[in-house]
Image (cartoon, rainbow, N blue to C red; front, top):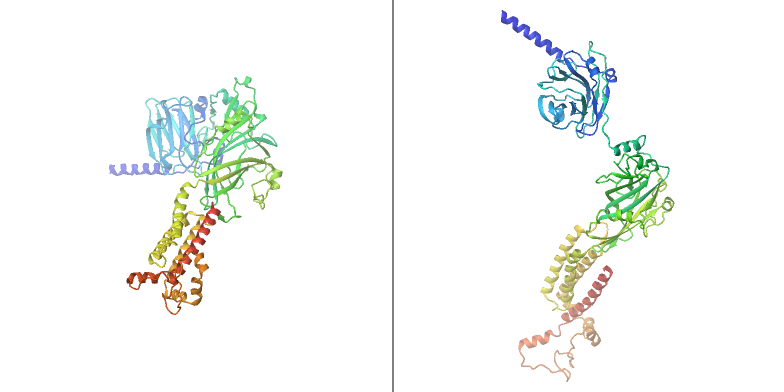
Length: 620
């Protein structure tokens, strides 16, 4: 019976505790208005420290045994970091209390005794933080060193740790995680019916600032970085082309640029004598106004993106200088000439740099060639990268009036942007004309050597023995080799143009096929019968025709009804006792098909030679 009553009391107590623990605490808007706000946007870095007001903390506590009590609310997806310390800006060796709420992607909560290390207590807390609502928490430290961290409204804390050598909390700070934006509400009153309504008044610690920081803060006070220094600003521009790559398939030019911008803001000038002789300051991009650039004929509508953002250097006269490295993709095409000299091709492209902000009126100037300092800066920019292209550049400033009239925008292409709205921007533009010529040494070896060898052997074949199957097989092999080469060239040549070397290969291919078909046609019985006709016989036996084509002289027979009888006196008749081979050889000498084949070979040699020579001359 006694055991029964013990179980009953135990279950009753556990049920009461469980019911209290399940009570959800609502952090209302009215509660939030009584707190102060701190926003963390720069990752895991404790930037601002707040000093604890000891007298306020004595009044704002729920129990006299508590020496430090803090009520906060967190709005974050994960990683809400709270730091309690004795000194501002502690290092990793200083004893602190660091509480990580929702660490590890909002999966655990941990108490550490040093910065980023030395964990003392940890608990699994999945989804303890929320990115859409504030979650309220409390921190309590008693006189004997008991540290408790828990949710508002819960009886039991999430973390509890007994510190045998507790520290005196004089400062606190907040941080988040890289890529996480966290909002903290601090100096909140005790959210209970019996709690004190006194709100702690913590003050932000003024960071120690150098003379440069003080001057920088003075200059930036009330300065809007989005507003230019005046209604019209003069910007000195220095542009250096560091790399060029052209894709003939897409007609796209990829250009590496090194750009130097220089301007003067009279409102940012200062007297060095009043600031310990400081005559130069460095600003992050975005702290002060700077001319943002874009490329007018880029393949995308974006600002020029600085690959390695550099600081803006400003001297005491208000003159600012900033250097940037960027890469831009622009269209470069010429529909006026479909037949190109690829792979010995060349292009003339234009890059038009203009201001990103349309409402700004900026007058552009080039770096002064007579100024050794400015030219030294420009020449000291990034080195040029040598690749497959010979590059020559020329830059010029085009003012708004000239741009509207479309004058001198590009060589032989004054109507390049005729259909574009040219009246939106009132600022000057900087036009870079880039002439490209491919270094085609490797291409020449790969493509022209086989072509010239094939053309040479085809021409030499016309001087070999006609009506022979060896020549037919030679022509067939040449056709196969040329077709394989054409298949390979098709992968490399631009699809929207016709390279002259491709035409050259096709002409050689058709020439080889024509020569092969001619040889096969002359070897047929139809060709032999045609050669026996009176017309062909009269042409082939003509003295002038044979002299023109350097054919062997014919033996003239006095008796035309017989063959090889009654020759002229100046021709020696072969003896009747000659061998069969001699008679056959003598008979072959007067084969009409061979004479016709020889005439066609010499004719094709002349035509092919002239065609190849003219095409090579036009190509080169």
